Length: 255
Image (cartoon, rainbow, N blue to C red; front, side, top):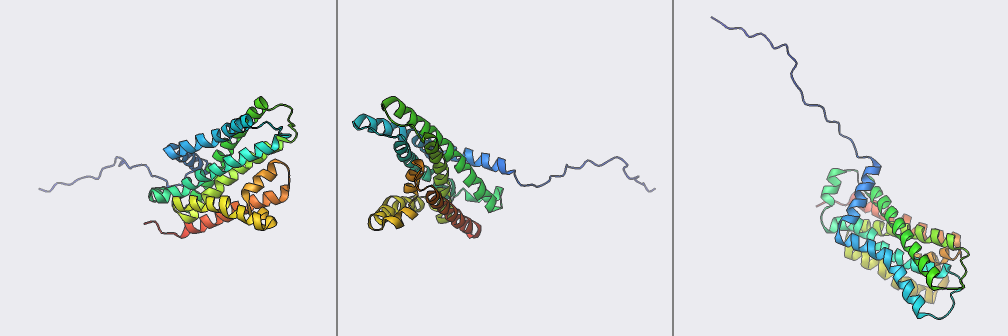
């Protein structure tokens, strides 16, 4: 006797389809912000970038007996100091991934490397602008408390210049870090050029140095001098750094 089996008529349960999709840009930016502030070095840079300028302002005001005249110069100088610290924040966001070999996981989660670099640049720009804004506000408070008879004319423009410069320097650091893919090399190269080579160039060829020096551009912008050329200097540094970083990021093999 043979036994026949009737086909099952009930529905066979199936697993829900998983639709692959890229993370939203805002999600990537938020992730990069958290990554930048999740390490001890990132937290330390955040604190230093906010507090170094106002502390230096307190010391300078206490040691000086001369009238400042206008607050735009000191705000610009302290803003330049903050921006130089923010270079390191940008470098760590990109070169740090290669140095600590976390770049494999990053590119595995987001294979489109251009999106990763764009998210990193946006994240450090937001952080740099925010830290520079807080630092500049504290510096202005120090000047208001410790200095008398100074002119506050143009302070709004100086504060805007400092905030924009903080964002720009952080992005420059991210671009150079992505281009060199090595944290010590990127930091050493940037600080040697900005704090060493360019000041020497200004000594022998002031006009040439002024057209290349981003630190000098911050001072000029804060005081409302040579606005167009200063913006051009910062923009050129930012574009060149990001372009170099994008080229290397797209072509370098991940070991």
